[in-house]
Image 1 (cartoon, rainbow, N blue to C red):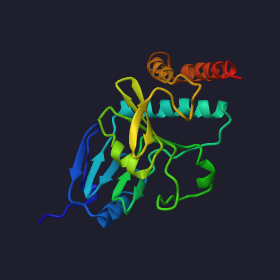
Image 2: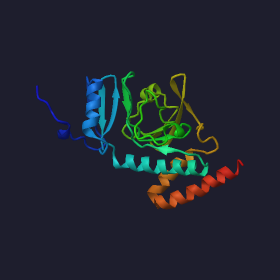
Image 3: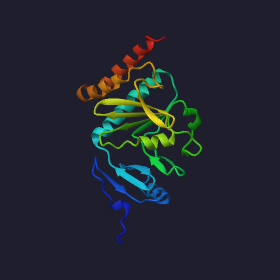
Image 4: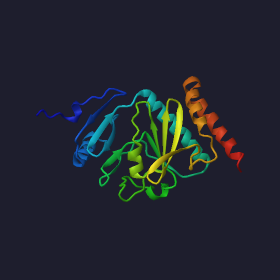
Length: 216
C-alpha cells in the first residue's frame, strides 16, 4: 500500500476530492496537519471527507456578500462576529463543515472573547452562508449542527432557509433581517462586477438607512 502525504495533494480550483473511509481521529489529524492557512475547504460526514478548492468567482461573491451583511448589522446597531470558514465539528454527530461565511448575531455574546469553539458546549453560528458555484452545500450537516439559518447563493439567486424541527424550510424573509428585502443583495453583487466594489458598498449603506427609516 502506498501512503501519500497531504502536502503532495493538489486540488485544482473548482474541483474536489473525496476520501472514504476516514475515521474521526483521522479527520482531526488532517485538520491539524493542514492548519488554518489554506485554500482547501473541508466537509466531513460519517467517515466521508471532501476537500474542495473554491474558484475566484466563489471567493469574490463570498467577500462582497459578507460585506453587505456587515453593513446591515452595523446599521441595525447589532453586535456580531464573522468567523469566515471556521471549522465547525461535533464528534458525537460525526460531522464537520467549513462554511463560506458565517455570523454570530443573537449568540455573539456567548462566544465573545473565545479563541476556540467547541460545539459540544458552544452554540453554532446564527447564520451560515454557502456560495453554490460548485454545489458543495450540505444542508443536512448544518441542520445536524443546529445552525438556525442557512443562505445559499445559487446562480445569482439567494435562497434563505430556516431550521424547523431539524430540517430547513425555504422562506422569503430572514428572521435576522425582517425589514430588509434581501434580493437586493444579489443585485448589488451583479453591480459590483460592473461599477466596482466601493461604489456598491457606499450606495448599499445609504439604501439600508433608507429602508430602516421607513420602519421607524
